Length: 474
Image 1 (cartoon, rainbow, N blue to C red):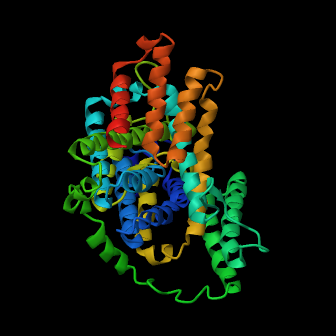
Image 2: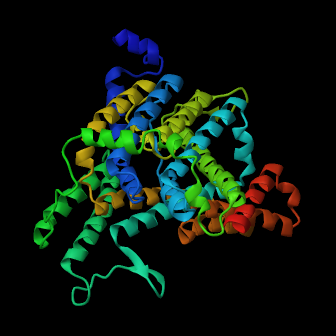
Image 3: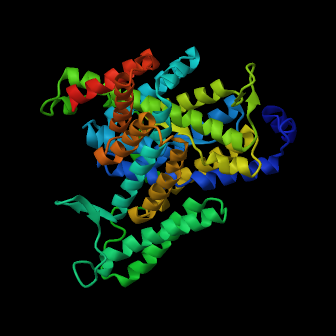
């Protein structure tokens, strides 16, 4: 077996061994296992698909995607439903634009198919270059701010206000607040502080441990709240097979069963076939762009951190087996859509495994095995309260904001598109609107400053599509 693994994954060639790859695979799983609780929690808000169904879809697609990148590209990376892309699915495509859960799965399927086509033809570079550098750098930050905002809302820290639209939840025990309303808020705050402290101390799986710790504290403090445990087991079960049943009837294959039925969208006043076509194109395009930038950036960043980059014929450093890694990502996205979850992408948390010595796809295989085992723990994951998984949303949002340091804020022609890209995502509750404002403002600034020739054809086409989205569908 040892010789087989060595030949298959070239362990000796990359200076590693089975034990090191095992530790790396387990580390990567611990770092990204939070997605198993966060993703189903977000999808359950739709009210049309259960936590258990999406839990299985998330775990299964993670297994497929991680095995693919291991076998096709032999890289120590793992895949799962991407943070930010799941928010785009739930809050933009479904709640914002009015598409159904099954409709939104079609966008993910189209995203995967386009990604496969772009990878096979090499056209992904053209689209990648069509988006200005300022907007590329700002997209992760905007998504980070958006999902952090979602986390603050899910935790109940940020609440609706008729006068200012949003406000901070009350902590005033002498006023309207009670211990029952304050306790969950304090748990989230403690969880965020805990994950930051553990990350500072380089604790592996800090986000997961913080979620589990916040959950334990939440239920422990529940003893101090009258009526907290009344009907606690209502709607809950310890039978893992229930989640598989819900997956089979409510998630798997829904993209084909109900995905192409857009009657509910067309029934909304002001919607017609024309608006559907424009909304379909721009939403699918936004999915594809976010997926592409996320994947390419994560692949490069993770491999650079582990000194895995190789020199190409031009003397430039690149990800080994880049096309195969991108193809694994694209196929996994199609698989995720069929299973019933949002776009599957390479996780930046894979860097944790690379950091402890992961050098080959064998570590990814160990990560995939852990996700397979986790498929049978859906009842346990379902006990995680929103106040606990909100910790992951807030902290991942913080991490994604780091890219703003790469933006030249002293240049107005760069600062404005970047700012609009970042700000409009949370302010409009729509990721595609942020991308649209960034692209359109970039084009207009170039036109107004006499640098229209610097705008390439691809940028004009994408900008025109997003402009049509505003004037024809919003």
